[in-house]
Length: 503
Image 1: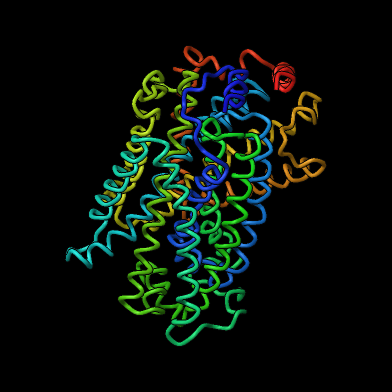
Image 2: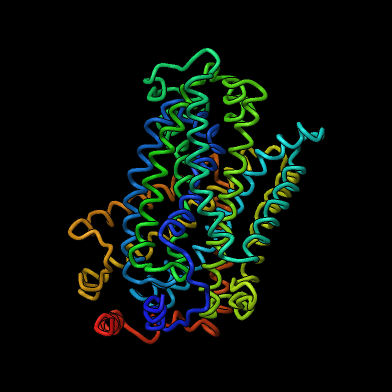
């Protein structure tokens, strides 16, 4: 840890956060945020409606293969430049502080969307389950209240300390794997009426939307694409990880790879247990309908409670990642009132105010959508689709900027092989980076076309605010990441060489 601290010092930063995370804990936070029991489950109805059962076989696999390339590209960058600012530090180092500033804010937009989307998903499952126990009627209002309570609990846990959160993240990773196992075994042996033939989940051509199947299938990819978000958390907690240039890189990559495998197995058994696809699509929650039909009322509810707790752990990890990103950005004075958000709790060694700001911003985004739906009750989109599309576009654009800038720096001879960290893609780096950028451009357009155009309007509004902030705040206050300000890539490399000699 002493060596890790010295290495961070050479990038211009003091070791303020508690460095107490091991390799598994770093992997666990990204694996928990990806959470196949959140994204794949909460948007199961979306995927089924647009792409039919073939969405689970082909759609999930297609998205996962491209996302693995994106994850590998980001892992390579995390190994090269191991600071909690991650995406925006990388962008600033390659191109300059202005592009870094925009990268940070675009990432923040995506982070707001992902926290709100995860905890709202949890509320969508928890509210009807609680309603059946307590005896009230589940409505949009009660869902919003449950959502607020979940956010509040996540804020408290994160405030108390990284040790507790790290332990819960470790538990969450194992919990996800165990619950998937319970779900798969239950469906394999106890599904009412037995399972469908394996080729059922690869059937294409069936859609329950008004779109032509090819377009409907693409729209349905939101289910898988939103699931595979947030794995940059391993980079945002890099200053709390021991031996981060290897462990954080593997955390990013392995979280996506393991999620692909476990998610595919889970989706296979859930989809093969469907005997009334029309009823599932017509229901308020397709996943709840399928599980309840397959396993019966009591047993099905137990499984659904297990899934809901997995979503809770997912949201907990997401707040951790979001707050660390804001902390890193604020210590460089990138946000209004930065001194507040960069403040570390003396007692708990956590960015307490940044944690609560993350909670508040996430609630406000869902509240805006709630009010909008009251004013325009006939809107043909769901709150969850709105929140998830915002997070996908915001996060993936932020992922793509440093990947593109790395390629540009390589073409100009600024970034060379010697600048890579111990975790790198070697000769495959450039082709994988290029394919990653093509996919990011493709899905960024796909996620905001009708019927989810409201996400496009929200993102446009946020970008307008961002431009206004550029004119009113950036020029006067933001001086850039200290590493990018005071050290070029060549200078950083020299310092790292000296560090290696000292070791």
